Length: 236
Image (tube, rainbow, N blue to C red; front, side, top):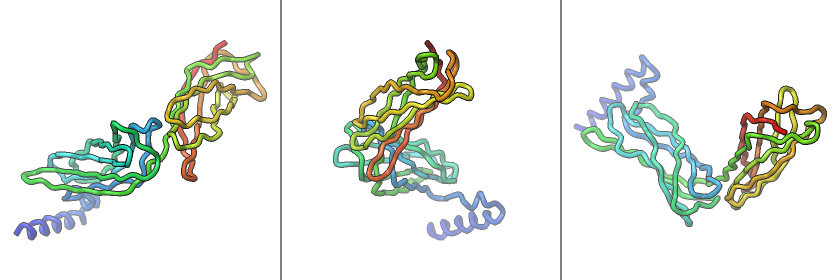
């Protein structure tokens, strides 16, 4: 009898979908699907992985969680799934007491819901832990000479095992743009570089400007880029 009721409920939902395609996409069971890659924080203590999940309307969420295991570490993180009947993407932070390393890992995702009884969805996958490049720009840049160049501190960090590639910071004031170059050191720790950006031609004036930096690291034949874009003051 229970199986017949479930079949009838699915048939009713399908029929209702003829009147509204949005309803046709709503699931009567919880679902969860893992992404295949995760961005590993430079220090290896956390990672970010994407999931797509859903649970049926008017059910209560018991748990929505992702766990990741690796020979050197393991950890888990939850995500705020709302039971609205349709699939939604989530970016889940998984933290660990140990340190993950770049490369393959195992991940599992679970969604448990309740409404009189419990229902569960699960997914498991082999994933790739990819490097993340994190940038921080100083809020001032020091003008040099007559203003034809300026020095700005750029702090970058990237994962041990990755290789820093030539990166740049651009300073912009009005139509004037100057660039300077640096190469991140990938060892999991933040490193600060005093980068000189030079104009050709033109001169900067003290006052409002903007800094933009792209920093790149490579791993396993692929490049990964961090971006920072901030207002700053040009000072003497």
